Length: 360
Length: 225
Image 1 (tube, rainbow over the protein chains, first blue to last red):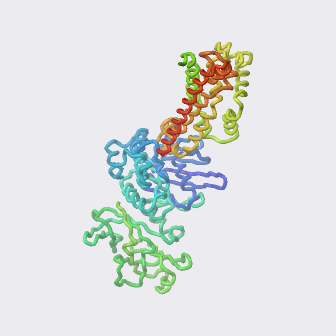
Image 2 (tube, rainbow over the protein chains, first blue to last red):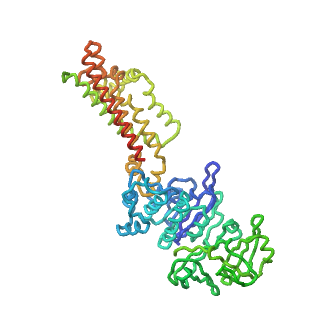
Image 3 (cartoon, chains in turn yellow, brown):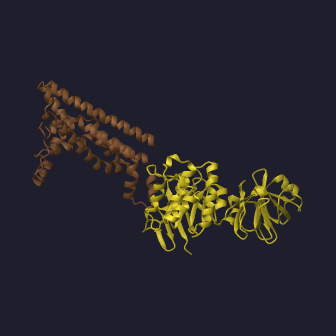
């Protein structure tokens, strides 16, 4: 497999990195961790922005950095989006977009240029100065500028973190759409769990310069040994096939497993297509047996494990008949009332509002 | 009316200022770029040397230049023997003197302009496949343009007012080294007050217009940002 391999034993003052990492050649790989964990440094290593000591990077059998080799950033076939848009102030939007295109080895065609401009809604801005655009618009230009080079590796360093909620909500769906169409690996740095679970296919968890876990997103989100499953905003990610869509109620029916379909609010979807769905641990309620509730989605589960999180809550790891794992976040009091024990069979009700879908 | 020959020092002064400014920009921009990229003892020392003409009496600069350029010095005799070049009391010598005299007025604004850009636009250019030299010409230079314009106007204006350095290394050769400041001094010494008035008035006007232009340029570039 043509993996991207990166390893480093960098030491700079108090900052220390010590890891070995393989990034799959397809899909979105999220580098997730608290600030100071080394995420941005890892991304800069992949980009070749600095020649870090004791660092090796290769793609397939091509070394980009080793003891003998260092390919500088401007010779690497990458596209990068930074935390801030970093548009060139002396160029207008179109000149910014074309700056990378004219220098790339295999840039987008004029047709693809126009398509992307339309998709990102940049058509009316081409003649304008970057300073006259909003933060969200600027970041869209920056994303387009990187994509138009048609690089073989995309790197994004917290591209939404400097934006307000409204601007974020404007770009995130686009990134999700990009995810579907992208044929190249994207390495995405963030410390936002929702962004991570919505976009990522693979996850690399970083802490204090070390890789504490790496693997498929869905399995790492529910691993009780990892910090993600212990957060109040813990969530699960599923890519589910659409069974049908109900226009009248604005709901889609998705196949969860052999026994259960889930319904959640969505605009119409093609039956058979995949929908990515996030389930919030907080949006799952547990009950002894099936009963009338406003929650549409009821899933039979049995308890695999439960543990306290903080002084008031308990997280319960549940397994479905399809071997899927769910985490429910309930108060310790209700866990006691319900008698949650390892092995007991329960009904998990998932509120539709706890389901967050994305276009896939 | 003024005689045409009276205006000769003004043309010479403008020519000297123009040539010196061009030399300063061509050599100074890469040098200032280099200074802006690096830190350390060497850089501090070079920055101090660049700033020296700000505080030194021009006659000190002139005196040392005269010693170095003189055909009796090793550099001067080498230049004379190899290229037949005698720098003291020549226009070329004056250009060298002016370049040193106006050095801080060009280097400092350009260096500050480059430093203010910071590393980010150049990193961004690198991620867009621009080689370092490409990034310098297409990103760093255009972004530093207001600073470079200021430097050019300041270097030009400051060279116009040069007196002490010229007096020591240039002397008073009409059409070659008699710049306007020397000419005015001459006219006053020989009690030709009317001529001194004409020359001084013209210089006052030129200098005022230059600085006014610079103000406008700065205002415009601020409005742009």
